[in-house]
Figure 1 (cartoon, rainbow, N blue to C red):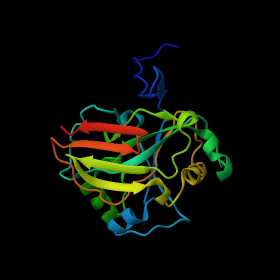
Figure 2 (tube, rainbow, N blue to C red):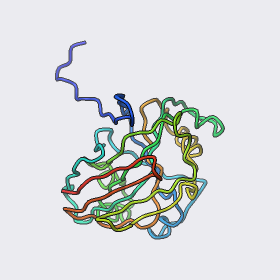
Figure 3 (cartoon, helix red, strand yellow):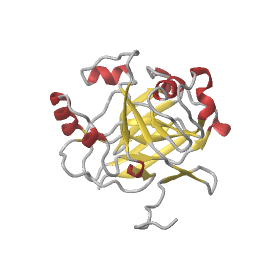
Figure 4 (cartoon, rainbow, N blue to C red):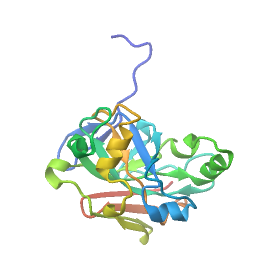
Length: 228
């Protein structure tokens, strides 16, 4: 096949402990998946209607890399999240078979232009510019589920400049990983290479240029970086 222009590189994430790379197809995210975060944002949790949105695959920033402060905002917020990588997919995936599609886990940040999101909410407009911008998805190396199992009660935390900002247990998620995959597959044909950011707990706050962050999924995955 001959392209009119050279194709862009495929976004990918390293697999911890190996030379393998996980090629990223799509990035899905779920909102309000921790009740304490929904409360701090003045919202309610509705198990009948999960909130999904997306980020471009090339929004990933690999661990320990610098993250540029985005344009068009003066209120960049951090949202630490457990990240799920899929090795398979499909539509209408039953809950009881959902974890069979999981390749592995990592930890990431759903960076958010909070001022743009607030303005969009006020107008009833989409959140795309608030969530799906360049460099908005820093993510750690992945740990295969075949090695670590499924961390359904792991401690998820974020420190900024050495100060604890966010901390929870993954067992506090409103929708479990299996339920998230099940619900998401009602809307999309999921596939190998998809990433799912599984929601953030309370404690979201602003990041400034020069801030150093460290996100961790209970000793399984660590993500470090600096906001430039």
